[in-house]
Length: 392
Image 1 (spheres, rainbow, N blue to C red):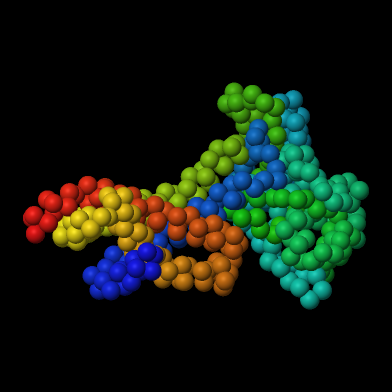
Image 2: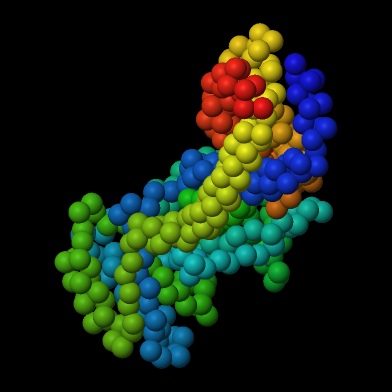
Protein backbone atom coordinates (compact mmCIF):
# COMPACT_ATOMS: atom_id res chain seq x y z
CA UNK A 1 0.00 0.00 0.00
CA UNK A 2 2.76 2.43 0.97
CA UNK A 3 4.72 1.59 -2.16
CA UNK A 4 1.59 2.18 -4.24
CA UNK A 5 1.05 5.59 -2.64
CA UNK A 6 4.62 6.68 -3.33
CA UNK A 7 4.29 5.52 -6.93
CA UNK A 8 0.99 7.36 -7.27
CA UNK A 9 2.41 10.66 -5.99
CA UNK A 10 5.57 10.26 -8.07
CA UNK A 11 3.54 9.79 -11.23
CA UNK A 12 1.78 13.05 -10.44
CA UNK A 13 4.95 14.91 -9.53
CA UNK A 14 4.34 17.73 -12.00
CA UNK A 15 0.91 18.57 -10.63
CA UNK A 16 2.20 18.17 -7.06
CA UNK A 17 5.44 20.13 -7.60
CA UNK A 18 4.14 23.41 -6.21
CA UNK A 19 2.72 21.73 -3.09
CA UNK A 20 6.00 19.93 -2.46
CA UNK A 21 7.87 23.22 -2.91
CA UNK A 22 5.52 24.97 -0.46
CA UNK A 23 6.03 22.24 2.12
CA UNK A 24 9.80 22.44 1.59
CA UNK A 25 10.00 26.19 2.23
CA UNK A 26 7.48 25.99 5.06
CA UNK A 27 9.64 23.38 6.74
CA UNK A 28 12.80 25.50 6.39
CA UNK A 29 11.16 28.58 7.91
CA UNK A 30 9.65 26.48 10.68
CA UNK A 31 13.02 24.85 11.34
CA UNK A 32 14.75 28.25 11.59
CA UNK A 33 12.15 29.69 13.97
CA UNK A 34 12.08 26.57 16.13
CA UNK A 35 15.88 26.54 16.31
CA UNK A 36 15.82 30.07 17.72
CA UNK A 37 13.04 29.20 20.17
CA UNK A 38 14.68 25.97 21.33
CA UNK A 39 18.01 27.80 21.72
CA UNK A 40 16.43 30.49 23.89
CA UNK A 41 14.34 28.08 25.95
CA UNK A 42 17.36 25.88 26.71
CA UNK A 43 19.33 28.94 27.79
CA UNK A 44 16.44 30.21 29.91
CA UNK A 45 16.39 26.96 31.89
CA UNK A 46 20.10 27.19 32.71
CA UNK A 47 21.24 28.88 35.95
CA UNK A 48 22.42 32.49 35.83
CA UNK A 49 24.99 31.92 38.54
CA UNK A 50 23.83 34.85 40.68
CA UNK A 51 20.71 36.28 42.35
CA UNK A 52 19.57 39.65 41.03
CA UNK A 53 16.59 40.17 43.32
CA UNK A 54 16.93 43.18 45.68
CA UNK A 55 20.07 44.39 43.89
CA UNK A 56 20.28 48.02 42.74
CA UNK A 57 22.74 49.67 40.37
CA UNK A 58 23.85 53.23 41.08
CA UNK A 59 25.36 54.98 38.06
CA UNK A 60 27.41 58.15 38.71
CA UNK A 61 28.68 60.74 36.23
CA UNK A 62 31.11 63.36 37.61
CA UNK A 63 30.91 66.99 36.47
CA UNK A 64 34.71 67.57 36.47
CA UNK A 65 37.69 66.09 34.65
CA UNK A 66 39.87 65.96 37.75
CA UNK A 67 40.65 62.28 38.34
CA UNK A 68 42.06 62.90 41.82
CA UNK A 69 39.01 64.89 42.93
CA UNK A 70 36.60 62.38 41.42
CA UNK A 71 38.39 59.49 43.12
CA UNK A 72 38.23 61.26 46.48
CA UNK A 73 34.53 61.92 46.07
CA UNK A 74 33.93 58.35 44.88
CA UNK A 75 35.55 56.90 48.00
CA UNK A 76 33.40 59.15 50.20
CA UNK A 77 30.25 58.04 48.34
CA UNK A 78 31.29 54.40 48.70
CA UNK A 79 31.78 54.78 52.45
CA UNK A 80 28.46 56.61 52.83
CA UNK A 81 26.68 53.90 50.87
CA UNK A 82 28.03 51.23 53.19
CA UNK A 83 26.73 53.23 56.13
CA UNK A 84 23.05 52.83 55.21
CA UNK A 85 21.36 50.23 57.40
CA UNK A 86 19.04 49.35 54.50
CA UNK A 87 22.02 48.20 52.39
CA UNK A 88 23.51 44.79 53.14
CA UNK A 89 26.58 44.83 50.86
CA UNK A 90 28.19 47.07 48.23
CA UNK A 91 30.65 46.62 45.36
CA UNK A 92 32.14 48.87 42.74
CA UNK A 93 31.92 47.53 39.21
CA UNK A 94 32.59 48.62 35.66
CA UNK A 95 29.97 49.60 33.08
CA UNK A 96 29.20 45.95 32.19
CA UNK A 97 27.04 45.21 35.24
CA UNK A 98 24.53 42.35 34.98
CA UNK A 99 21.81 42.98 32.36
CA UNK A 100 23.51 46.18 31.18
CA UNK A 101 23.83 46.93 27.47
CA UNK A 102 27.61 46.93 27.71
CA UNK A 103 30.37 44.37 27.26
CA UNK A 104 34.11 44.27 27.93
CA UNK A 105 36.23 41.53 26.36
CA UNK A 106 39.89 40.62 26.33
CA UNK A 107 42.09 37.67 25.40
CA UNK A 108 43.61 35.27 27.92
CA UNK A 109 46.53 33.02 27.03
CA UNK A 110 47.64 29.77 28.62
CA UNK A 111 50.37 27.81 26.94
CA UNK A 112 49.63 27.76 23.22
CA UNK A 113 45.92 28.46 23.65
CA UNK A 114 44.29 31.89 23.49
CA UNK A 115 40.64 32.50 24.35
CA UNK A 116 38.49 35.59 23.91
CA UNK A 117 36.65 36.12 27.18
CA UNK A 118 34.40 38.60 28.96
CA UNK A 119 36.12 40.63 31.66
CA UNK A 120 34.37 42.00 34.75
CA UNK A 121 36.11 44.40 37.13
CA UNK A 122 34.58 44.14 40.61
CA UNK A 123 35.42 44.65 44.26
CA UNK A 124 35.89 42.05 46.97
CA UNK A 125 32.23 42.13 48.08
CA UNK A 126 30.84 41.47 44.60
CA UNK A 127 30.31 37.78 45.33
CA UNK A 128 28.33 38.70 48.45
CA UNK A 129 26.26 41.31 46.61
CA UNK A 130 25.34 38.88 43.83
CA UNK A 131 25.26 35.84 46.17
CA UNK A 132 27.61 33.83 43.99
CA UNK A 133 29.11 30.51 45.04
CA UNK A 134 32.75 29.63 44.41
CA UNK A 135 33.07 25.94 43.47
CA UNK A 136 36.89 25.81 43.46
CA UNK A 137 39.42 27.86 45.35
CA UNK A 138 38.25 31.16 46.82
CA UNK A 139 37.10 34.67 45.99
CA UNK A 140 39.75 37.39 46.11
CA UNK A 141 39.94 39.61 49.17
CA UNK A 142 42.25 41.55 51.52
CA UNK A 143 44.68 38.62 51.57
CA UNK A 144 45.59 39.54 48.00
CA UNK A 145 46.73 43.08 48.87
CA UNK A 146 50.22 43.55 47.51
CA UNK A 147 50.25 40.19 45.73
CA UNK A 148 52.79 39.83 42.93
CA UNK A 149 50.12 38.55 40.52
CA UNK A 150 46.68 40.12 40.12
CA UNK A 151 44.06 37.63 41.45
CA UNK A 152 41.19 36.61 39.18
CA UNK A 153 38.19 34.31 39.52
CA UNK A 154 37.15 32.50 36.35
CA UNK A 155 33.96 30.81 35.20
CA UNK A 156 33.59 27.11 34.52
CA UNK A 157 33.13 27.86 30.80
CA UNK A 158 36.53 29.58 30.68
CA UNK A 159 38.11 26.75 32.66
CA UNK A 160 36.87 24.16 30.14
CA UNK A 161 38.03 26.06 27.09
CA UNK A 162 41.35 27.41 28.33
CA UNK A 163 42.65 24.71 30.66
CA UNK A 164 40.98 21.64 29.11
CA UNK A 165 40.84 19.45 32.21
CA UNK A 166 43.81 20.89 34.14
CA UNK A 167 43.30 22.32 37.60
CA UNK A 168 43.30 26.11 37.05
CA UNK A 169 43.86 27.13 40.69
CA UNK A 170 47.21 28.85 41.04
CA UNK A 171 47.88 29.06 37.30
CA UNK A 172 49.57 32.29 36.17
CA UNK A 173 48.36 33.95 32.97
CA UNK A 174 50.23 36.76 31.21
CA UNK A 175 48.59 40.15 30.62
CA UNK A 176 49.16 42.65 27.84
CA UNK A 177 51.37 44.72 30.12
CA UNK A 178 54.26 43.56 32.29
CA UNK A 179 52.00 42.19 35.05
CA UNK A 180 50.16 38.85 35.15
CA UNK A 181 46.99 37.21 36.46
CA UNK A 182 46.75 34.34 38.90
CA UNK A 183 43.63 32.18 39.11
CA UNK A 184 42.42 31.94 42.71
CA UNK A 185 38.88 30.61 42.22
CA UNK A 186 36.24 29.21 39.88
CA UNK A 187 32.47 29.84 39.77
CA UNK A 188 30.19 27.35 38.04
CA UNK A 189 28.08 29.80 36.05
CA UNK A 190 27.85 33.47 35.19
CA UNK A 191 25.41 34.70 32.52
CA UNK A 192 25.01 38.46 33.05
CA UNK A 193 23.85 39.42 29.56
CA UNK A 194 20.36 37.89 29.51
CA UNK A 195 18.45 34.80 30.57
CA UNK A 196 18.15 33.90 26.88
CA UNK A 197 21.84 34.12 25.96
CA UNK A 198 24.37 31.32 26.10
CA UNK A 199 27.09 31.31 28.73
CA UNK A 200 30.37 32.80 27.50
CA UNK A 201 33.84 32.40 29.06
CA UNK A 202 34.32 35.04 31.74
CA UNK A 203 36.62 36.11 34.54
CA UNK A 204 36.48 38.64 37.38
CA UNK A 205 39.33 41.09 37.89
CA UNK A 206 39.79 42.67 41.31
CA UNK A 207 39.21 46.38 41.87
CA UNK A 208 41.58 47.51 44.62
CA UNK A 209 41.41 51.29 44.83
CA UNK A 210 44.93 51.89 46.26
CA UNK A 211 46.41 50.09 43.24
CA UNK A 212 44.00 51.55 40.65
CA UNK A 213 44.82 55.21 41.24
CA UNK A 214 44.27 56.28 37.63
CA UNK A 215 40.92 54.51 37.21
CA UNK A 216 37.45 55.84 37.92
CA UNK A 217 34.54 53.44 38.43
CA UNK A 218 31.13 55.00 38.03
CA UNK A 219 28.94 52.00 38.91
CA UNK A 220 28.02 50.70 42.36
CA UNK A 221 26.07 47.48 42.88
CA UNK A 222 24.27 47.23 46.21
CA UNK A 223 22.13 44.55 47.78
CA UNK A 224 19.33 46.16 49.74
CA UNK A 225 17.09 44.62 52.32
CA UNK A 226 13.79 43.18 51.03
CA UNK A 227 10.98 45.70 50.80
CA UNK A 228 13.10 48.76 50.03
CA UNK A 229 11.44 51.04 47.48
CA UNK A 230 11.18 54.57 46.15
CA UNK A 231 11.24 56.22 49.57
CA UNK A 232 14.66 54.83 50.46
CA UNK A 233 15.93 55.41 46.92
CA UNK A 234 15.10 59.13 47.11
CA UNK A 235 16.65 59.47 50.56
CA UNK A 236 19.82 57.66 49.47
CA UNK A 237 20.25 59.68 46.27
CA UNK A 238 19.69 62.92 48.19
CA UNK A 239 22.38 61.99 50.72
CA UNK A 240 24.89 60.91 48.07
CA UNK A 241 24.18 63.98 45.93
CA UNK A 242 25.25 66.08 48.90
CA UNK A 243 28.68 64.44 48.67
CA UNK A 244 29.01 64.42 44.89
CA UNK A 245 27.78 67.95 44.25
CA UNK A 246 26.93 68.41 40.60
CA UNK A 247 27.21 64.68 39.86
CA UNK A 248 24.47 62.97 37.89
CA UNK A 249 23.16 59.91 39.72
CA UNK A 250 20.73 57.29 38.47
CA UNK A 251 19.42 54.23 40.29
CA UNK A 252 18.04 51.16 38.52
CA UNK A 253 17.06 47.77 39.88
CA UNK A 254 18.57 44.69 38.26
CA UNK A 255 15.05 43.26 38.04
CA UNK A 256 13.97 46.17 35.85
CA UNK A 257 17.13 45.84 33.77
CA UNK A 258 16.44 42.12 33.40
CA UNK A 259 12.93 42.84 32.12
CA UNK A 260 14.30 45.29 29.55
CA UNK A 261 16.79 42.72 28.30
CA UNK A 262 14.03 40.11 28.21
CA UNK A 263 11.92 42.31 25.94
CA UNK A 264 14.83 42.79 23.55
CA UNK A 265 15.40 39.03 23.43
CA UNK A 266 11.72 38.22 22.85
CA UNK A 267 11.16 40.65 19.96
CA UNK A 268 12.98 38.54 17.31
CA UNK A 269 11.22 35.37 18.47
CA UNK A 270 7.79 36.98 18.37
CA UNK A 271 8.39 38.62 14.98
CA UNK A 272 9.66 35.40 13.39
CA UNK A 273 6.86 33.38 14.98
CA UNK A 274 4.25 35.73 13.46
CA UNK A 275 5.86 35.50 10.02
CA UNK A 276 6.07 31.72 10.33
CA UNK A 277 2.43 31.57 11.41
CA UNK A 278 1.28 33.49 8.33
CA UNK A 279 3.37 31.21 6.10
CA UNK A 280 1.92 28.07 7.67
CA UNK A 281 -1.59 29.47 7.32
CA UNK A 282 -1.03 30.15 3.61
CA UNK A 283 0.41 26.67 3.07
CA UNK A 284 -2.51 25.13 4.97
CA UNK A 285 -5.09 27.03 2.91
CA UNK A 286 -3.34 26.09 -0.32
CA UNK A 287 -3.04 22.44 0.67
CA UNK A 288 -6.67 22.29 1.79
CA UNK A 289 -7.90 23.91 -1.43
CA UNK A 290 -5.86 21.63 -3.70
CA UNK A 291 -6.99 18.52 -1.85
CA UNK A 292 -10.62 19.60 -2.01
CA UNK A 293 -10.33 20.26 -5.75
CA UNK A 294 -8.51 16.98 -6.48
CA UNK A 295 -10.96 14.89 -4.49
CA UNK A 296 -13.93 16.45 -6.28
CA UNK A 297 -12.30 15.55 -9.61
CA UNK A 298 -11.83 11.93 -8.53
CA UNK A 299 -15.47 11.09 -7.78
CA UNK A 300 -15.51 8.37 -10.44
CA UNK A 301 -12.39 6.75 -8.98
CA UNK A 302 -13.88 6.85 -5.50
CA UNK A 303 -17.21 5.45 -6.72
CA UNK A 304 -15.47 2.63 -8.58
CA UNK A 305 -13.41 1.68 -5.54
CA UNK A 306 -16.48 1.66 -3.34
CA UNK A 307 -18.39 -0.38 -5.95
CA UNK A 308 -15.75 -3.13 -6.01
CA UNK A 309 -15.83 -3.46 -2.22
CA UNK A 310 -13.58 -0.77 -0.71
CA UNK A 311 -14.90 0.47 2.60
CA UNK A 312 -15.20 4.16 3.49
CA UNK A 313 -12.32 3.80 5.98
CA UNK A 314 -10.05 2.45 3.23
CA UNK A 315 -10.86 5.44 0.99
CA UNK A 316 -10.24 7.75 3.93
CA UNK A 317 -6.87 6.15 4.72
CA UNK A 318 -5.84 6.33 1.06
CA UNK A 319 -6.24 10.11 0.85
CA UNK A 320 -4.58 10.63 4.23
CA UNK A 321 -1.73 8.42 3.04
CA UNK A 322 -1.38 10.39 -0.19
CA UNK A 323 -1.04 13.64 1.73
CA UNK A 324 1.53 12.13 4.09
CA UNK A 325 3.56 10.89 1.13
CA UNK A 326 3.30 14.32 -0.46
CA UNK A 327 4.59 15.88 2.76
CA UNK A 328 7.38 13.30 2.90
CA UNK A 329 8.71 14.36 -0.51
CA UNK A 330 8.91 17.96 0.68
CA UNK A 331 10.44 16.95 4.02
CA UNK A 332 13.15 14.78 2.45
CA UNK A 333 14.47 17.84 0.64
CA UNK A 334 14.07 20.04 3.71
CA UNK A 335 15.75 17.62 6.12
CA UNK A 336 18.65 17.12 3.69
CA UNK A 337 19.24 20.87 3.81
CA UNK A 338 18.59 21.38 7.53
CA UNK A 339 20.85 18.52 8.64
CA UNK A 340 23.83 20.51 7.37
CA UNK A 341 23.45 22.98 10.26
CA UNK A 342 24.39 20.57 13.09
CA UNK A 343 26.94 18.78 10.91
CA UNK A 344 28.78 22.01 10.04
CA UNK A 345 28.26 23.61 13.49
CA UNK A 346 26.67 26.69 11.94
CA UNK A 347 26.48 29.77 14.27
CA UNK A 348 28.43 27.81 16.91
CA UNK A 349 25.18 26.41 18.38
CA UNK A 350 24.90 23.03 20.09
CA UNK A 351 23.85 20.25 17.70
CA UNK A 352 21.14 19.24 20.17
CA UNK A 353 19.31 22.51 19.47
CA UNK A 354 19.13 21.76 15.74
CA UNK A 355 18.08 18.14 16.20
CA UNK A 356 15.28 19.10 18.61
CA UNK A 357 14.05 21.80 16.23
CA UNK A 358 14.31 19.37 13.32
CA UNK A 359 12.18 16.75 15.06
CA UNK A 360 9.52 19.26 16.11
CA UNK A 361 9.39 20.80 12.62
CA UNK A 362 8.92 17.40 10.97
CA UNK A 363 6.15 16.50 13.39
CA UNK A 364 4.38 19.83 12.86
CA UNK A 365 4.51 19.48 9.06
CA UNK A 366 2.95 16.01 9.26
CA UNK A 367 0.26 17.29 11.64
CA UNK A 368 -0.41 20.18 9.27
CA UNK A 369 -0.76 17.80 6.33
CA UNK A 370 -3.11 15.46 8.19
CA UNK A 371 -5.16 18.38 9.51
CA UNK A 372 -5.63 19.81 6.02
CA UNK A 373 -6.57 16.41 4.59
CA UNK A 374 -8.93 15.40 7.38
CA UNK A 375 -12.17 17.05 6.21
CA UNK A 376 -11.75 16.50 2.41
CA UNK A 377 -10.88 12.84 3.07
CA UNK A 378 -13.93 12.38 5.29
CA UNK A 379 -16.10 13.90 2.56
CA UNK A 380 -14.58 11.55 -0.02
CA UNK A 381 -15.11 8.52 2.19
CA UNK A 382 -18.78 9.48 2.62
CA UNK A 383 -19.52 9.47 -1.14
CA UNK A 384 -22.05 6.77 -2.08
CA UNK A 385 -20.77 4.63 -5.00
CA UNK A 386 -24.08 4.67 -6.88
CA UNK A 387 -24.29 8.47 -6.75
CA UNK A 388 -20.66 8.90 -7.83
CA UNK A 389 -21.03 6.52 -10.80
CA UNK A 390 -24.37 8.00 -11.76
CA UNK A 391 -22.88 11.50 -11.95
CA UNK A 392 -20.17 10.20 -14.27
